[in-house]
Length: 247
Length: 318
Ligand SMILES: Nc1ncnc2c1ncn2[C@@H]1O[C@H](COP(=O)(O)OP(=O)(O)OP(=O)(O)O)[C@@H](O)[C@H]1O
Ligand SMILES: [Mg+2]
Image 1 (cartoon, rainbow over the protein chains, first blue to last red):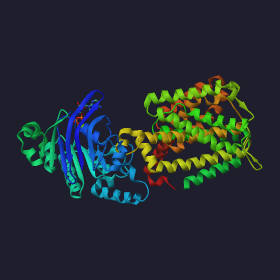
Image 2 (image 1 turned 90 degrees about the vertical axis):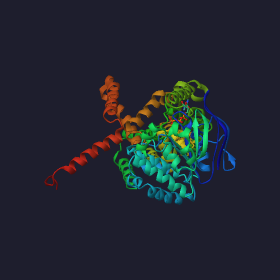
Image 3 (image 1 turned 180 degrees about the vertical axis):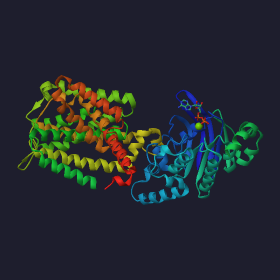
Image 4 (image 1 turned 30 degrees about the vertical axis):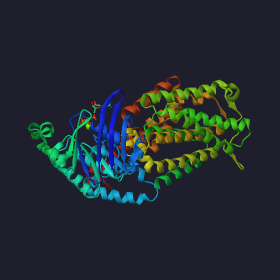
C-alpha cells in the first residue's frame, strides 16, 4: 500500500533521514520505533507532505507522492495524527472534528460526513460530552482522542500516528491501544510511531527500528520484541520499569 | 434570523427618525467604515493575516470608479462591476507574493503596498489630479432617486452593510469559516487536515479587498470628491483599529469599532487641541480593560451582571 525506497530528508543542509526503505501492506499495523531525534516524526511529515525537501521514492497505491502538497495527500487517503496533537485550541471539539473532514464537505458526501461525525463520537464518547467545549480545555488524553478523531474524519485508508501515547497515564494508553486495534479490525492500515516500544510492538504486525535516520532492524513484531538488541536499547530493564508504569 | 430582523428594524427606524443631513451623513460614513472593517476582519480577525494596507483597496475602488465615470462617461452602475473585478485582480496579484510572508513581514509588506498606492494617487497627476484630487464625480441615481443627499444614501449603504453581514456570517458558519479560523491558530495544522492554506489566504484577501473597493465606490459617488489623503496610511491604521477595538473575529465588532472610530472624533471636537490626546486615551483604556474588543467585553459585562442577578435571593424579584 505504502512503499518508501531510499528516502532521504533534509532540513536545509541538515540531513535527518539518510536512505530509508520500508513498506506497509493493506490492513497491517506497522510500528516504527526509535530514540529521540532518530527521525521518526520527520519521516511521517515527509509522507504526509508537510516536509517537501526529500529525495527518493514514496509510492502510495500505485502512484508516487512526489511533489504533492498535504491537501492532495489527505485527498488520496493518508491522514496524520501529528506529534503534540496540533489541535485548534480555541475552536470547539465539534469544529475540530469537522475540520478533519474539510475536503469531504462538497457535494453528496456531506450527509456521509454527518454520519461519520456520529460514528467518531461513538468511538470516543468523551468527545460527544465535550462537543461544544474548546479543544484547548480538554485533558491530554481527551486531546489525543480528538486528534485521532479529527484524522479519522477524513476517512483515510492509511493513518499515520506520531507518538499517540506521549504523556498519557497507563489507563489512557491502554484505551488508545484498544482503539487502534479496533481500527485495524475495521480494515484500517496504521503506521504507528512510538517511543513506547513495548506498547507499539504488542499490537503491531511488523516493526522497523530507526536510528540516526537509518533503519537498523526490521521484522515481525514478535521477533523484535524478543530481539536482544531491541531489548537492550528500547525494552531494557530500566526502560521497562519506566514503561511498565505507562502500560 | 431574529437578530437580522432587529438589525433591519433599527436601520429603517434610524432612517425615519434622523432628519438632520449632517447626522445622516455621519451615519452613512459609519456604514462605509463598517464595510472596510468587515473586510479586514475576515482577513485579520478570522484568518489571522495582518494587513496594514487596507485603505489602498478603499482608494483603488474610489479612484477606479471615479475615473471611469468622469473620463469615460460611464454610468456608475456600469463602473461598479468593472471596479470590483479590477480591484479584485489587483488584490489577487498583491496577495500571491505577499501572503507567503507572515507576522511582521506581512505587516511590512502590506504597509509598503498601501504606501505605493497612496503615492500613485498623489503623483500620477495627469490621471488622479494629484494633491487636489478628483472633483465632479457623478452621484449615484436610480430613476428619480439621487443617492447624494438625505436618507437615500443612508439606506443604500446600510442595505449593503446588511447584505455583507449576511454573506460574512454564512461564510463564517461554513467549512470555509472553520478553515479560516484554523488558519489563524496554526497554518501547519490546517495543512495537515487538508486545507490548501495558501489558496485560502489569497481568497480571503481578495474578498476583503473587493469589499473595501465597494466601500470606495460608495464613498466616491456620495461625496463626489476624492483626494489621496482619505486613503493614506493613517486610514489603514484606522481600519485596523476599528477591527481590534470592535473585536477580532466578530462581525458585529466591525460595526461597533467602525461606529466608535467614526463618532469619537466628532464628539471630541469640543476639546479642540486636546482632541487627539483624549482620542488616544479612550482607545488605550478600551484596549486595557476590554482586551477582546468592545463586543466581547460588553457581552462579558452583561453576562456578569446577569449571573449576579440570578444569584440574588428570590424575594428581590417581581
Ligand atoms: N525543523 C527542523 N529543522 C532542523 N532540524 C530538524 C527540524 N526538525 C527536526 N530536526 C532534526 O531532525 C532530526 C530528527 O528529528 P525528528 O523530530 O524526526 O525525531 P523523532 O524521532 O521524531 O524524535 P522524538 O522521539 O523526540 O519526537 C533531529 O536531529 C532534529 O534535530
Ligand atoms: Mg517525533
